[in-house]
Amino acid sequence: MPSSRHFRSFLVTSRDWLARRGLLEAAVLLSLFALAGSTWLFVEIADEVREGEYQHYDDLVLRALRSPEDSALPRGPDWLLQVARDVTTLGGFTVIILITFGTVGFLALRRKWHTCVLVLASIAGGAVVSTLLKTFFARSRPAVVPHLVDVASLSFPSGHSMLGAITYLTLGALLARTTADRRIKIYCLGLAVMLVFLIGLTRLYLGVHYPTDVLAGWCAGIVWALLCALVARWLQRRGAVEKETPAPPGGR
Image (cartoon, rainbow, N blue to C red):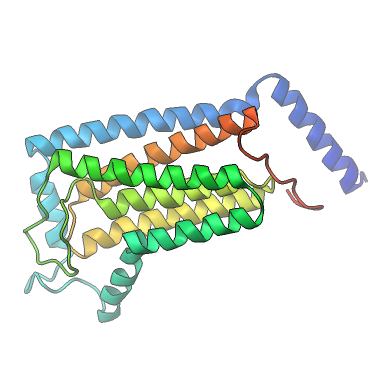
């Protein structure tokens, strides 16, 4: 039977063969399709929200998450409310700052200085975009059910959902670009997607956002994260951002 070394040599040869035919750029093509699709979906949602087309469905979902007897009581066990409050803070400004600087510190220890700058610029730029969108659409917070956490800003798009998507998807993509180990790439991106999804759901459960707010926040965050990932890939090819770290022996 062929040794693992021969098998890895075969995989490398196959990868080179595919690269010469441009098939390894399929990931970039899929990213562009996702970018276009997310942009289109955000525009469609925003247009319908401004016309009030989805208001009935937005209210229906929020009511469905509350007790029929008392709209101030969320459905589910008592502990679920505290879990939702804890999870939703992952999309809050304070936690985002802590995670961002923690990641920058990790990259600095690995002497990936250009990637540090790219992370900071990506998340700071995304925060500015989120604020501008909220100001432009100026949608009021839901009034159909009582809020279970304090909120002060405007509603559309969901800032927690958008900033969470911007931060975790951007960090997941950029961190994945710092390694050639496929398992680590999948872990980083999978964890990012899970966090973004849970943060959005908590905003509905707590009654502080409409479903269209959350969906639009996800779309806008995905668009920004994909743009940052494509920029990072382009800069890596030009040598402006550090190359991937080779996978350890036995890595996939």
